[in-house]
Amino acid sequence: MEFEYRKISEERCKEIDSWEIHDPYGYGKVFKAERVNFVTSMDESLLFCQAFMPRHDDVSLGVKGFTYLFVEGNDYYLFEFECKDVKDNEIDGIKHRYMKINILKQNFIEESENKRELLDILKSMISKYEENFCRLAIARTWKYNFVFTYKGEEV
Image (cartoon, rainbow, N blue to C red; front, top):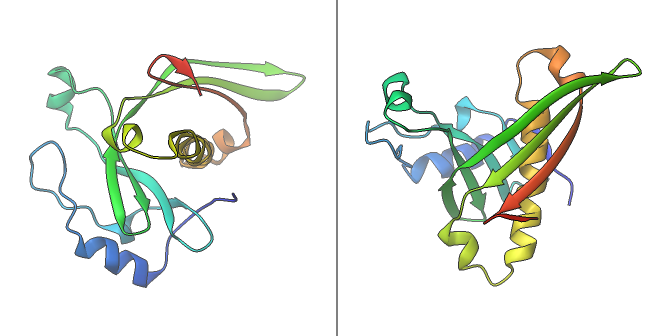
C-alpha cells in the first residue's frame, strides 16, 4: 500500500475534528486535524500523525514520548512508540540513520483479527512519518534503516 506525507482534505479534517479527540495528558486540549501533516493512504481511509506532546514538566515526571493518532476508516486510536538506538553515520557520502522502533503494546492491536497486517501498516506509516516529519530539509535526504519490534519481537 502506498502512503503519502501531506495535509489531508478539508472534508476529512472536519470529520476528524468533529470527534473531539482529547489529549491523554488531561490538559483539555482537543486535536485539530488541519494543523498537521499526516501519513495517509490515497483515499484518506488510513491516517497517521503525531497528535499530542507532553509538557516539559511531564517529561520530568516520567512521561516519555509523544502520542500518535492512527485512523482506520471512522475509528481512531491514540498510541505511543519509542525510538531506541538511533545511530547516524556516513557511507560513501550518504548519510544513514539507523533506528530501532518499539511499538508499545496496544489493545487495538491485540484485539485485531489481522494483527500482522495491522502491524505492517503501522510499520509503513511510521517509517514514512519518520522519513518526512523533520523540518530540516537536510535530514530528509538521509537513508533510513528501521527495525521494528512489538512486545519484544521483531515485526
